[in-house]
Structures are given as structure tokens and as C-alpha cells.
Length: 452
Image (tube, rainbow, N blue to C red; front, side, top):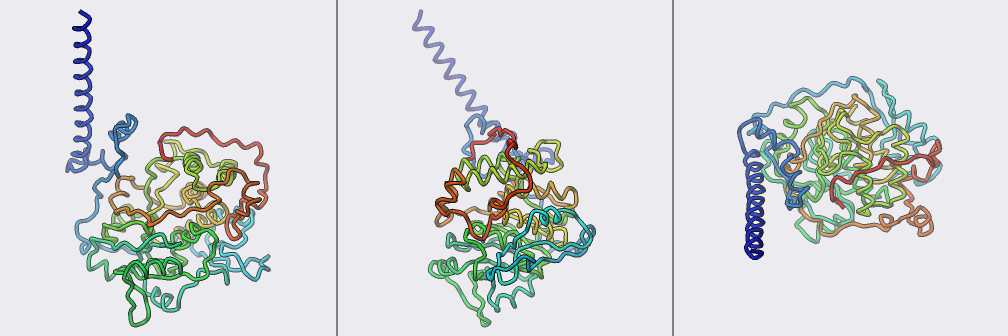
């Protein structure tokens, strides 16, 4: 009798397991079918972060591949009509501080010595504004004359960057002849990376002395402005409008990416369809900057006490954790792709974002949402679904991973005693904040993803 019962129980477990596996396969099949379906409602399921994948992830049944979905772009780049430039309304004239009044150092800092009062004033919008925005006089990030001359003609830019010799350029694919003629493909590198690229791939020289790897024009930055390679990489990424001042539009992609969508179609989809001037994807895992900060600390991507100090300042200044009632789908972007029309408002946003990266940590995903919060509704930008972001490129592994000792530091004393403090960036973390932060407690973080 006991043997019969056990056999029945085994059969029941087996049937349940088979039914469960079939249910999972059915859910996956439905998800994949919905992504390719021409039915608007079903394809919309794919364009949002998939509930099916969320459920499977929570069960531990998904291998978490890159979730890609169709991008609603025009079929033919030649049919895309380029609209008139967006007029400047709120901020009509923007200029930049290039010399600090207190500047006495013969080697000025690239980001300047912005004080807390200047920082606060930079968020108050006026028709005419003058702000810190990198490129202080004689502070580095210098280009060769041949490159300065070349970029004068660049109105439409696809930009990328490689610093510290961790990559080689990946050639874009599916680029139309129209876009090849319209866009400048500019790969910004430091001298170490240029040497690495020359040793590992073919670099060709044109008659004027310009350096090329396939479609990419190599633009070398000399006299790097920061000690930390990650901060150096933020110069072309965030301050694209300063490095290439003639650009009307730009698409930034990180150096480890291979672009697989025509850039003209990207501008049409993410800017011109909705009349936006800035577009960036929603982060795959996190919505709140405090959750992102927690993940950075867990992954040891920057010193824990310095991340905490930055988050305390933001919380003290009113930056609440993300919730569904906020106007944006996330406070945390996937910052590896940035799509911009260079209006004065967009340029101001980029300046203020860079200033936060310069003052605090080089983890730019922490400061993006804060700057959005401070500017309110002034910037008209679009945060698009992460699955579309993954459909824009093929991700390649770095040839090596960059690491710095400060990432592992657990206390401020450890940073000071071991000489890990940066000399050219992050000065806001070492400049006394004009308020008492000792009683500030960061909001608790619910770890909604296994990231890190």
C-alpha cells in the first residue's frame, strides 16, 4: 500500500514538473511572438519592460539575455525629412566660465573650482546664463590642429570614446550612404589608447594627417584633465557640445558598442517623432538613484563612503527615491547611449550634469536624475524602453577591465591615509558642505534585482 502511494506521489510530481515546464515554454513563446507581432497591443507588450521576463526572472528561470524588441523607426533613411532646429525658449543665451576669480594655480582644473553658491545658482534658469562647463583655460583636453579643423564641418555627429587602452573601435553596420555623407563618426581617444589601437588594428592617414579606423575618425585628446580614466571618458560623453561646438545633433555610444541602426533613423525615432531634444534609455534594473548607489557599492565600482556622501547631499536637497507617480519612468538611465539636439537647454543640462560628475563621483548614473529633478519640466526629453536600447547595438567585451584602488576603499580615512584621493576631480566630496549632514539617513533600499 505504501509502495503504491509513493509511486502515485512520484507520478504527481513528474506531471506537475512537466506542466510547469510547458507553462514556462508557453510564456516564452508568447513573449517572443508578441515581439514580432504586427498587432499593436501585442507589440506594445514587448516595447515595455516585459512582465513575462520579470516573472521568469523572479523564479530564477530566465538566463537574462539582452531583451531586444523592434524599434518603430522608418524603413528608409532616404525618406526621413530633417526638421527645422528647435528654437531656444527658456534659456536663450548660454556662455561658459573659463577662468575662476580665485584661480591662482598655474595648472587650473578642467572643471574649475565651482563653489556651492555657484552650483546652486546654476540651477536657476534665466534667459541668459553663464556656468561652469569644463574646458577651463589651459586645463587640458587639447586636440590636434588637424582635428580642430576637421570638426568645424560636423553638424551631425556620432561620437564614441576609448580611454586607458581598453578597447578598439567597432565598425557600425547598416549605415546608409546618406548617413555616411551626413554624419561625422568621431572616436575620441587618449594617447595610451591611440598607441593600443595602432598596435591592434589598421590605422590609415589621410592627406591632411587625419587618422582613421574604418568609418571612425580618431580624435586624440592630449594633456588629460583628470587622474581617473573614467572621468576623462565623461568629457566627450557629456560635453559633446563643447568638444564639437558646431554640432546640431549628436549620438553618443560607449566604446564597447557596435552600432547596428542607421543614425538618421535614431534621430527620427527618438527626437523628431516626439519633438524631443534629449533621449536616453531607462536602466535595465534600477529606477531610484539610491538603489543604483547601493548597487555601485556592492559591485565596488567606487568608494562606498564617497557614494554615500553624494547620496546624502542629494537627499538633503530634496531628491526623493523614484516612485511611479514621478513624471519620468526612471531616475536612472542606461547612459551608454545619449541622443541630443544641441539646443541651449540641452547644452545647459549637459553642463550641469558634468559639473555633478566633476564635483562628486564619476558614476554619472547617480547624478543624471538629480539634475533632471533640479530643472523640473524645463528639459523636454524622452526615456525610452530598455529593450529598444538593446536593439541599437551589439555589445562587445572590453579587452580588459579598468579598476582603481579607490573603488575598494571602505572608509574616508583609508582614502586619505593611502593617498587615494583624486587631485583634479571629486573636490565637492572634500569641500565642506554648507549644511550639517550628520543627521541625514539615506532611504532604505529594496534590492529588486540581483545586479552586483
